[in-house]
Image (cartoon, rainbow, N blue to C red; front, side, top):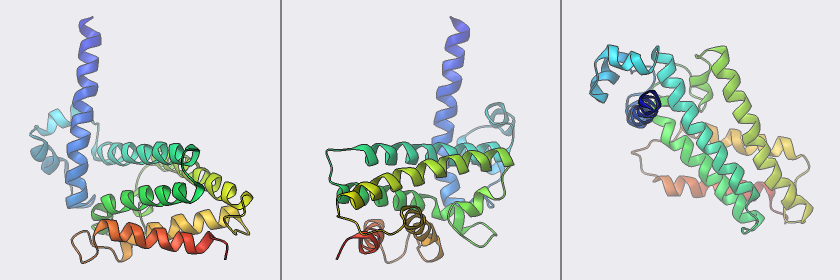
Length: 206
């Protein structure tokens, strides 16, 4: 019983650390984060932080994968929610997508690479992490395609190619990092609405 309790405590502690680490990474960026500074922010010694995460990449990838998985699950649920119209589901999908980009744009903006959404971070990680992110991306695209296909079948959306349209909408959202500033003149809700309007113009029948 004691071993089970310890294991549960470790999971709870790790989850708590991830939540606090995410806020630090979003503020300081991936390149601007060191293990020592992050440990100080979390109120831990460096060795204590290494107890939960073997290296810096493990911390960064865990934070990113955790939030990305939540995004995927949320958008999968949105795509299947028959209580909403297909237009409402498209709006909710875009809202989730853009909100995710806004939350992580601080970390991306401080990357030394040319910013291009979360891709600019993942490129510097291990092949294993990149493959996990690619698998999640496929699920993400599939959810949007499901919404678009249903709208096309109902003659609500006018889409010649579902896959191309889905990638166009998602990629455009990922480029938000090239112009959006979290503390700028455009608040997050307005940025979300800009992208919702863009997506609807792309797909709605005239």
